[in-house]
Image (cartoon, rainbow over all chains, first blue to last red; front, side):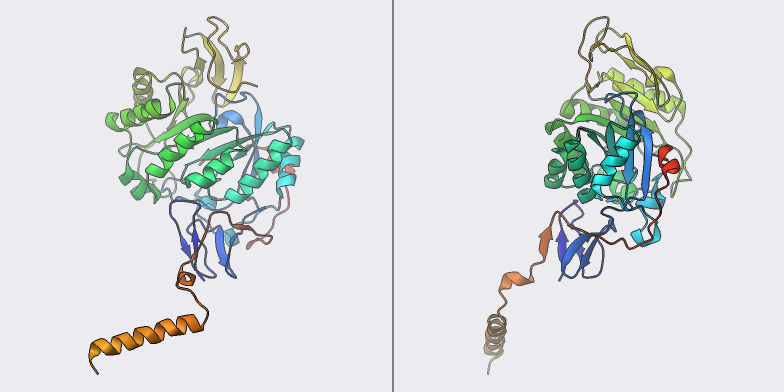
Length: 323
Length: 62
C-alpha cells in the first residue's frame, strides 16, 4: 500500500518498494523506513565557524555528520555527490546515536552538527542523536536549507541549540528552478527556529545573475529583519561554480561588498561575508559602539574580547551563546 | 432495462463487495507518516571508521 510521507512539503506518495524523493525513506512491507538511519556517510571535526555559525561557542570544534540524501535538488550543490546520491551507491559508516555522542567526546567537541546534506532529510537520525547528545550535556546544531514541515521541525528543535538556515533567494521561481522546491516552507522554518528559542543565524549564497540584484538582496535583508530581528547574524556567501552551475562565474568581491552594504544600511547588526578572506568582513563588531569583539581569519577565531557575552567597552549584551 | 438502472445496480453490487470484503471506504486512503521506522540495514556498503580522516575538516558545507 502507498504511504503518504509528511516530513517535508514535497509530501511524497511512496509506493511499495520505492523511496521518496529524498531517497532516504523507503516503503517496505507497508512501513516507511529511514534506510540511512545510523549510517552516516560523512563524519568530520570542523570549526563551528564553518557552518557558518559565528555567535555560538566561538573557537570550539563541532562533530559534524551527514547521511546520503536531501529534500532539495540544488543545481549548485557543493555536496551533490552525497546529497543527490542513492544510499546503495555511497559507502557509509555504522554509528548509532550513542556512538555519535561517544565520538564527539573522543574528539573533544562540545557540540554535534547535523550538516553537509540536510538533517531535514535524515530527520529520525538527527532527532535521536540530538536527544542522546542533550542527555550527555552536548549542544546540537542544525545546518539546514529548511525544507521541512512545521511539526517535525519544531519537534527536532526541542533538542537543538543553534541553527544556520540557508535562505537561497526571496523568489519562489528561484526555488522551483534551481532547487526543485518552494520558498514559503523555508521562511516558515526560519520563523519556527526563532520561536523555538534556537540561536539563529541565516545564510545566503549570492549567485551572479540569479539572486544578486539590489532588489532581491534588499527583500531578503528586510524579511529577516522584520521576521526574526535585526540582531540575527547574516552570512553572505560567495558562490563558486559547482555541479550543474559551472556556467556562471564566481561572485565578485564588489557584489559581496554590495550585499554587505545593503544589509548594514537596513540596520542589520551582524553581517558577515564568507568564502572570501577578509578579516573586516568576518570580524564581529559591537552593534552599539563599533568595538571589535571577535577577530577571525577565515573560519579561525583569532581573538575574543567579549566579557560574559558583553562588549568590554560599552557593556552591550551581544546576541549569541558564548559559552 | 434503462442505462440509469444498470448503473444503479453496478453501484449497489460494488458497495456490497466492499462491505463483504470487510473494507471501509477509508481503507483506500494511504497512511500518513511523519516519523519513519528506524532501519537497521543499509542498502549500500559499510566502511570502516577511519579516525584520521574523521579528525580532519570536512568539505563544503553544502
